[in-house]
Length: 539
Image (cartoon, rainbow, N blue to C red; front, side):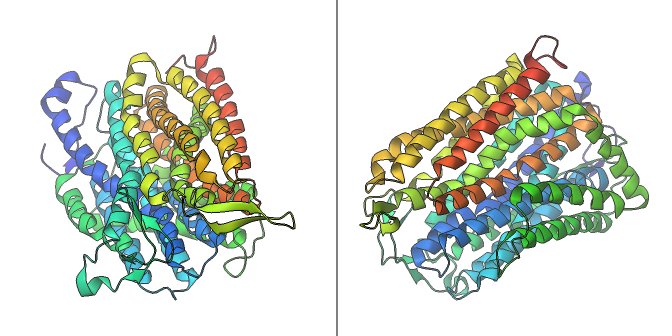
């Protein structure tokens, strides 16, 4: 079974699984995990980069910096829609190798652009757009791994892939601040810059006036991406059968199919951003709440109608998931868990900086000032990594518990915890943003955010379990990809909403809105999976 294309794959057969399948599945899983980890890191690195850009005095407003994270978030989410179907048309090994290699483009480009403070905003916006490669990778990675493991362990295996892959957020939030303290790439890595505001790492604060190499935030990932691409090429497999990949073709044709579908995602994402963002980048014509459904629908329809022949036939078969009501219920519920995790991960560092890094004082004219540097404020780069770390760490545990007691039951408890913690975070956020000493409210704010992240992690694992139990072999993979695509728009919505509400001086309103959404998901999960006579009882 060492061949690249595996045609005999029967993981629900206990004897086959123990004698042959488990070894192959685990090898593919343990190459998939670090590849996905780097995808998350490159996708969400703008959450840390923008904090350091603020510390270095780059000539951009706070709203413009929040927008960079939002651009990466929207693009990554949109690219998950075509990525959902990559395994079906191109094969797992071909997909993971190629999509991992593509991450080198935004990683290297960001490292070059950050060497000059005079780099125009549109360059950073383009690089944030390309960072969306990393966001798209989740859908294809999860779809691929779902085919390698039997249903009895899919909560655990998918939880490991997603949970440890999500450590890319934490790894990035720890590694990037540390990498920026050392000129590790010599003359090639460019010269250092001088901090104009206090920065930090997980070790502690770094005073203004210190040297930093912000460009290392992109260049550092090249060290990992090159060997990981090679590992995917030489170590992974395509499962070639009617249920998974009927005909992957040769690698070049597989890469061409992937590139074509990615191009559709980039076009719809870029068009949406143009209609959403203000001048000079866009024309600010449509609200984000109107625009996102348009982007999703146009991407799905363009993929369907711009493809032909065997590719169109394969996609038509996978589009049958949209006729299943459970696809839509799980899309909404998974948006609560993963959408919150990825959105808060993107917004958390800059939110800490803006809310607690500045003193908020009312002037004699009755107008609040929010731009007075707070010397006692916590360093965002010291603390921001902890919450996503716990959320990612607990995800496999959530999958394991759900394999034992049922995914829907765990999701119901998670929903209640998320509602309560979101309301608590909103309370302390409001208090801090109206205080000359916001650091007084930091620890309860931070503790409640830890609880909120923990709940999202457990809920991620429980929803994987539910999807694996509700859908058949052919549909489970595409549904995982589709739900993750829609949920990933949290990486766009949450930073965008935070930025808008901070501009309006009411950041707590963001959390009130999210708490209402969590309540809707609580009711939906109960109706579909927990009530008496539920459609599927506690899957």
